Length: 235
Image (cartoon, rainbow, N blue to C red; front, side, top):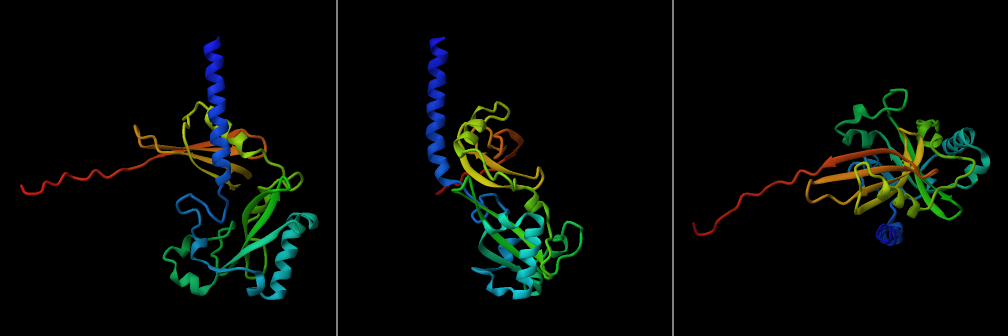
């Protein structure tokens, strides 16, 4: 009994140490670690303000956001960056045909806002919302995934503890933590990814609801490591 209790204390102390370290480096939508996460946004033209958008369209964008959320919610948003997709960008994309809105319509022009919202009154949270050339909302899921009423999430260290104690595809060492919107489950998640297991080359990811701390999804992949042939010098 004493041994088990001691082991529990050791585990908790390790978890707290990992939490304190990793929680200082949580990544958001502007600095995602997921390969390809920023695509196709990384091809868009980037601007530091909404000044690039005609005033009449900017007003429609504001109205569309307020209609989908509320005026009080809208007032809490700060625009960090604006990404623009136009004919110039379209001509440079080799797979533009698969870039469509949620109705399946081909996209010709996009204003993508990178908003910042303070969760728990102090946690910076960044998320994107896409609008078409007319200023209409393109993907409602980008706003539906937010809890517009409470805007409270669990602390990062709680998510880490859940990830480390979940026995299915266990994570022992954490590589990255990402706080963002999961459009599939329509919620905000802590996405916690493990360091590659050197014995199996496997990397595990757990998606933990940022609202209730429960594991809502898991994924994994194997890192393919190329084996280099031994080269002998001098025969």
